[in-house]
Every structure is written in C-alpha cells, then in structure tokens.
Length: 446
Image: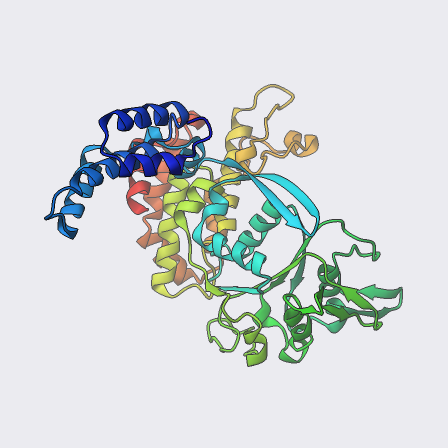
C-alpha cells in the first residue's frame, strides 16, 4: 500500500465487506490523510452504504436516511477546516499563490486577498478584468463607485488614468493632438498602450477610469467606441491595435476600462441635469457588465471607517436615509467621503485637544487616513480652543441645503440630541468611545 492514492483507498473501503481489510484501510487513511476530515467521513459513509448493499430492499429513501443520519451525527466542525478557509470565513486577509502560464513562460504571484476583494460586486468586476470586458457602474452619488476603482488599482498593482468626463472633454484629452507645446498624447491612448506621458512604457497594467461618463458630449463619446471595442479583440492571434491622433499604431497592453455614472447611459435622468442621453452604441460597449451600485454600509463601517467611531457612523447613516426619504439628494448627499471627512476632523480635534506642552506631539493614525498630518507649522498654528469640531463639519454640510431643508434634516435626525452625545464622547478615551449598545445597533442594521 506504499503508492496507493486517496481514491484507491476510498474505492477499497467502499467495495469490501472484509472486516480485516476495512480495518487496514481505515488505519492507512488515518496515517496518510491525517487531518483530512472530509475524506475520512466520506469513507465512513461509503462503508455504511456498502454494508447496506446486502439488503434487497435498499432504495433511494434508505440511502437518503443513511446519509442524513451520518451528517447529523458526525458533522465537520470549524476547527476541522483548512487555515485558508478559516481566514476567508472570518473575513481575514489570506495569501493566495497563483501560477500563471503564458506560452512557455511561467509566472508565480503571491497576493493578499481581504474583505475588500471578496465583496460580490468586486468579484464580478475582477471576472470582467479576466474576460477583458468593459465595466459600467451606475448608481446614486456617494455609493462608492470611484472607490471601487481605487480598490482594483491597489489589488492589481496597476496604474490608473482618470478622465473626468464633462461637456468640455475633448478629443485632445482622449486620443491626443497638437498643442502649442507640441504633441500631447491622449489619456485613452496611454492607458490602452500602458504608456507614460512621454511615451515610455509604464511597465505595468493600467485602469482607465471614465468618471461620470454620462456627462460627456455624445459627439465626443463616439471617439471612445473604437478603443472600447478593441479591448477584448484579437487579430490573427495578436491583441488588437488602435491609432492615436498622429496615426501611430498603438499595441494593446494590460488595460481595463471602467466607467461610472449616476444613471444608465441611454437614459436622461431629470435628477442629474448635467447628464446627456448617450448613443446606444456606447451603451452596447458595456453590455453584460453594467452594474447598479448600492451603498454597502457594512463595508463602509468595517473596511473604510475601520469601526471608528460608532456614534459618527450611526448619525451619518441616519442622515443619509432622511435625505433620500425627503428627496433632497439633488442638493447634497452623505457619501463615503463625507463620513471619512467627519471622522478625520474628529481625530484631529481630539489629537489637538490632548496635545500638551509648548511643542505639540501627535501620531498620525493609519486607520484614519494617517491624520493628523505631521505638518509642523499647522500643528503649531492651530489652537485647542478654536480647532475645528465635527459640529463645524456638519453645519457646513447642512449649509448646502436650503434653510428649510436643513431644519427638516436636523429635526428628523435629532441633531441637537446627537450634539449632546458628542460632548459626552469628547470626555472618553479614544479607544473607549464605542459603546456596546452602539455596536449592537450597528450589527442589527446589517
């Protein structure tokens, strides 16, 4: 039994009714496959079924009964799982090693996979990266569309070129052209060919982000059709090429194109007045990979705010919902950026208040965007009695609405009561701010 495989052992265990052989097989399995709980339980189940073959009345219901009883009485426990599976189930980062074969070349890559990558939408988009599909993300403002592009950039280790689309976006910006300073290469061309501004190779892949694509003039958008169609194409086994404004042929590198917007491309949304209704041909370039994006509060709390601090997150989440219910989103909205801004402001406020002595000493917190920023002049210039507060931040945000709208929002979110909570939080140690009741409320929310 020196070179016997796991499959051989399972076949033997399932076919024999000899007690001695079954004992030997069981012992071999324990020696060779110690820790493989799944395989051993499958063998036990196989033995049970084999023992029942002698019965002439064994039918489908009898098999189901045997399987059910075995599963119910001898379950696979969490501790029996592989360490990698445990980390994934606990949303902990885990290292994954990939072996990639390209012709005769073999490339081994090890990367860390965390909760930001295992989100369902990110998984779909990563699948589109592999399929060379263009992706269009649309949804309400502040839902994290652009943030997702940054997540991909960091995970892939690529560069990212951003085109901020609007009615003035020109062919010069997209595919290049002559300027008073000479020829300027277009952003689309650079991303497609993985080129630096001077035309030299980047040495890595590139994400082209067409941010707010519905705002681009439809006539200008037509320029994009060629490159969007060429991303996944091959000519005689070679990657498709495109031409820049000079007529130079640009070979395709590792390029992924992602666009964002607030509405579908071929619709005119009254809530977003700056949007154009785009041609169906442009929409077709994203067919099969157009996704509506929704706010992911759990991800915001755990992976962007890093669970700091519950009282801020709970209030802003409530404010976001009231703004939506009242139909005030055309004025302003609670975005991930606002949440991070308020969080950073509070971190700076507490750090300045706690700093003492003639020379203030603060430690940037990596979980709060490395704030306070270690700028000596600013640290010396800001005074504890006049440092910006989160009340200042929220009042500035409310000023984006009409006075009547702001009053409605403050009333429906119990803003005055929340400010009293803020005063109490200011007296607590930074690592003791989250209360059990607040954390339970957040868990119930999810």
